[in-house]
Structures are given as structure tokens and as C-alpha cells.
Image (cartoon, rainbow, N blue to C red):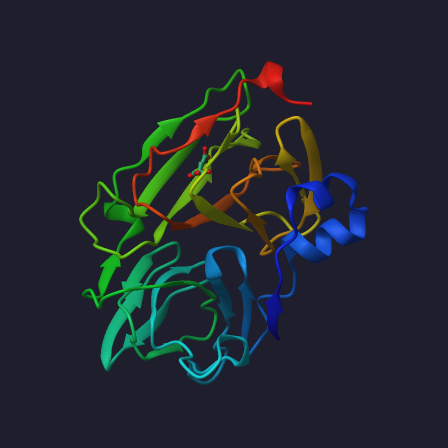
Length: 272
Ligand SMILES: O=C(O)C(=O)C[C@H](O)C(=O)CO
């Protein structure tokens, strides 16, 4: 799979059918055994990929949608959403346990190993090359969010962000893990005027679904999302959701700045 997806504007999203919304904002089939699958979106030119090495190593190589410069002008954030595996960045081997993350700078050559590993890759345009760094889930101090009464207790692990130790050009990325009994993420929701955000839901049971809320605050829409599916949130779209079971998700942003707190909360009373 190598998809080049155009943007849909807010006005069209208000009136889009369920299928049109899914075609524009939902990413299905990203993780296929023994394959690298990619999607490039016109929203902040973000690239996402699912890499499932199975028996043999796989490389992230040139992608048709990116044209002649290919991956050479991009930085990458990676999270292992499967079993243990290895990412090789320009010959250097990084072992990634489940939920571990990795940053790889502009123009890195990337290959992936490990039967059982499932790598989620996010690429953003980058103006300079910065050093690769592994971010261990176990060693990252989480931010505690939500409460039990609101079924939203969760831990947010910031891997690559403006206030952190791993440098990036524009990419921000982390993992949010819901506590047992929690189903809500990112509520009340918010907007980022200067960034695009992509969520990848994972650790959701097979028959589980997340009702993902999107759209302008006064014209909300929803997507029914299964495990290992991603949702693109343009700058005009809220991003929030409630699951039929607990889950985790990778959030990743690209855009004008790396100030993680640069967001506009939307009061619940203003949602329509
Ligand atoms: O659970 C949450 O809340 C989040 O993970 C919020 C995301 O980081 C986000 O949406 C940042 O814009």
C-alpha cells in the first residue's frame, strides 16, 4: 500500500457521507505481514507507515508519492506497537521493546527487523539533520490525565516534544495509555491552529472500536475506528474519542512549532 491522500476542507467535511469521511481521514490496512505500507497526506505533508518485518528485514525506501527527493528531506518518529524488534538507523542498531520509541534525523536510512514487531513510522519535512535517539517507554515520566469518574484516566508519555531532551525539527510524538476502566481520550477536545495531528489507535481488542470525534467544534462528525487504524486531524478538526474497551494510541504532530501546549481547548458546552 502506497497512498497519496489529498486534503478535504472543513466545509466539505460537514456534509460528507460516512464513506467520504472515512476515505479522507481514516487510514486502514497500514499493518500487513511482511510489508511496508505508507500513506502520505497533503496535511502538513505528513507521512505515516506501518512496517511488519515478520521473517525478514524490511527497509523504508523511496515512496512514489514523495517524488524524486523521496525520504531524503524527512525526519522520523517510530513507535513499536508489537513485540520486541530492532530498527537499524544508518547501520546503528536500536532495540525497541513494545511501546518504545525512536527518533531518526533527516535523510536516515531505516531498516526494521523482528518477527512479531510492528513498527509505526511518522515522517515530517525537516530542515536539518539531528541525532537519532531511542526513547524507552519504561524510562519516560508520564503525565497523568483524566479521572475515574469521567472514565478518562490515562498516562501520556511525551517522546519527542518541544520541552523534552530529544531534538526534532518539527515532529512531536508520544504514546497515551488508558488505565483499566478508562475509555475516553482527549476530552474536552482541542484544536491546533498551526499543526496537523495523526492518531494511531493500538492495543484495542479485536472486536473493540473507538468512536473518534472529529470535525469543527460546532459541526462534529465521527469515525468508527478499529485497532491499528489511524485518523488524520487537520488544524480545523477536534480529535478525541471513546472506546468500547481500553486502548492506547500514538499521537504525532507536525507544523509550525514544537510547543506541545500550543492548543485551543474547546469547552464541552460549545460542541455541537
Ligand atoms: O489523551 C490525551 O489527552 C492526549 O493524548 C492528547 C494528545 O496528546 C493530543 O491530542 C495533543 O494534541
